[in-house]
Each structure stands twice: as C-alpha cells, then as structure tokens.
Image (cartoon, rainbow, N blue to C red; front, side, top):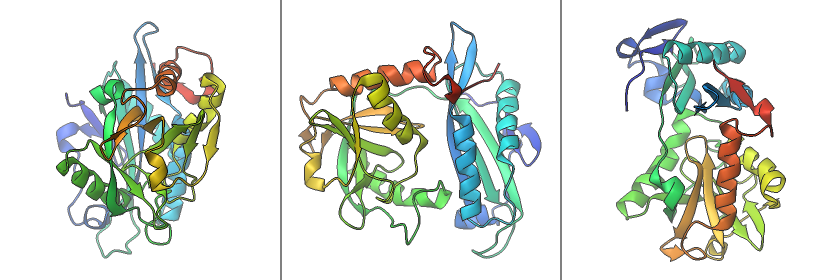
Length: 304
C-alpha cells in the first residue's frame, strides 16, 4: 500500500514520516483516544470521490469525546473540513480509508484528560476477496465487554483490544474471524464489525443494548435492506444455537463493508456460498456509496 504525502496532526499538515506523538502520552500508554473510520469511494466516470456519511461520523466522534470526558471537545465540523483538505492535498483518486482521531496528548496517569490532539490519516484501501467469496467465523470463547465495564457503543481505541483477542484466536484456529457473545450469552458482534443473519426472509441483528457499537454502517443496513432490497429487518437477541439455523449471514462496517459469512464453527450456512439476499445488498450498498444512485444522496460528501 502506497503512503500518502501528508498526515494532519495538531493543526498542521505534516509529511507522513514526521507525524509523531510522544510515547508518554495518555493516548499511547492507556489508549485514551477515540476515532472514526470513514470511507471515500472514487467514481471514475464522474471523476469524483464521495465520503460516506461524513456528518454522521463527525457527530459520533463528538459523542465519543464527551463520553471520555476529554478536557476539550474538538470541533468535529472543523475536523470534517480538514479531512477534505487532506484528501485534496494527497491528490487521492481511488477508494480510500480515513481515520480521524482525537486523543489525550498530555503526560500523566490513566485519568489524564488533556490537552487533546487531533490526527487525520488517509490512504488507499482495496477490497478483499472475502467481499466476493465470503468468510468463515468462529464463535469466540472471548466475551464481548459489557456496557458496565468498557462500553462498546463508542469508538474508543482501547475497546478494540477485546475484539483483537477474539480475532487473533480465530485466525490461530484456522478461521477468518470471530463472532463474540455478550455477558448474557447472546450474539453481540464481530471483533470490529456488526453482524446480521438472514432467517425466514428477514434480516435479524442484535439490538444496540447487546454490547455493540452504535454503528453507522449497521444503521445503513437497517435503512436500505427494506428500501432497496425488500427485506424487513428485526432487531432482537440472537442465541448462539440460532446462528447455525441462518440461511445467510454477513458482517458490516466501514472497513468490512458488506462481507458475507458462509460458515460458522465450520458449519456451512445455506449452500455454503454467498446467498441472494447478501449479494443484492452488496449491489445496493456499493451503488449507494459510489454515487451511482440518487437514493440517500444526502449521505454523500463530494471531495472535488
């Protein structure tokens, strides 16, 4: 993957190799940082890049900062503007992934809450074969952190170590990724993405009270499945045993987009191939994100 020319760090666009944060900061030592992953999609016919749901990502970044009790809540409208400026400065004209982060840039103990720094990174992001062929998942022995311990509904950097343990174990055991259960033994989500299954003609997904991220991509699925695919959505608890009764399943997220799950615990779902509902959903999602439809055009922010 090629490196971009610039990274935005603390009010400056700096060369990629000069973007440095001290190892003594709260962000480095204690994971005291929150972030948003955002996708940019390049439409070659229109010679335009579209950022998907930028305003919603910035809104959630504000909520995450407030929740973490940072000394200063950085202006996310300004962060959004700086993101556009950075993409233009890096002259990116391909599909990209963006990470906007606000972090404790001060030195001290775990409760240190400032000063607050801002970083924005951009870079090319190619799709993976799993988008087309699907992935295998293991129900993890690692439990999703509870809302009363380390709330998953915000995008705090430290939260991702919980999912990392599950992902590393799944890969060591020969799977592509993992599905985590919550403290009640119900399905939560993947290590860094939300989960849906198709059963009896409906798309079923855990509720936001299931110790999951309040995911923007998940909400997109809830909106477009009935609108663009004619598939109703049900938000409810999912038992572990019910996973193996699914006709189809998929993960969704900014990085994972719409990735089919073709087997769980080495049991094939349906035919064991990508099913018709997920295939149709992928087409609808990519038409939407690439600006090939007027549906939800307000979710797109043009860069150039």
